[in-house]
Image 1 (cartoon, rainbow, N blue to C red):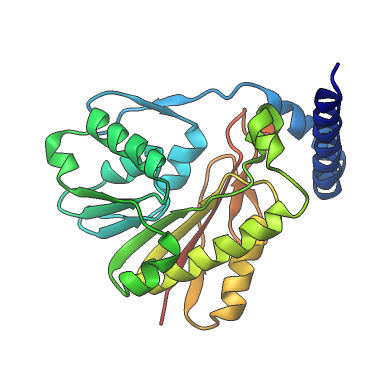
Image 2 (image 1 turned 135 degrees about the vertical axis):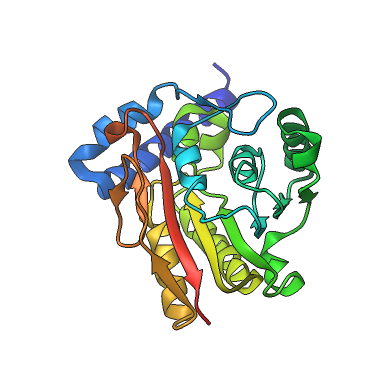
Length: 266
């Protein structure tokens, strides 16, 4: 074995040990069972409502996207939309409303456009616009413009870290903190972009509270009096300090997926 390869393997092992230690500290004796479920192959289900053909996704994603209260006529913003599964769920509830679906990655936007084109009728496609912008600027670009906002924020995505060398290679102990700062910025932009009385659904596929309820807590503290938490009912979910989370060891393999529904009040 070359020295370079040996060094790479040692670094990989170091990351695995650091990751395991971090999440064992959070989940304690539960971690081994949760980790085992995360390592199992996910079992996507077909979403078919108002689609030309089925789209396969984690059932937790369908349940969470369905939490955004829509009557079919709203102006909706999907801030980080690719690959597009949650956009399809939102579109299934639209009649005369519109969706602005955004992703900052040009490549991911191409995938988003493909998913929309392949799964939606021309009539439904006409209700959706896609963009390739920095969502953190949406509060400035589209102030008070939307009735509902879905922020499925970029996150640590620990299930991928456990099953993908590529994702493991970019994980380190400080990454959740950096992501939480980005998530808070995006959530502030969502708050500025939604109308008073409108709703924001914040979600991640992160396990770590720093990227989930602690982001919500920070918003409540920093934007006191502007937003309130709306109670949600979410099948197979567990309560967090704010919002709920679906974890695969107690949800028949679904998730992980965190969700919190907020309403702008001023």
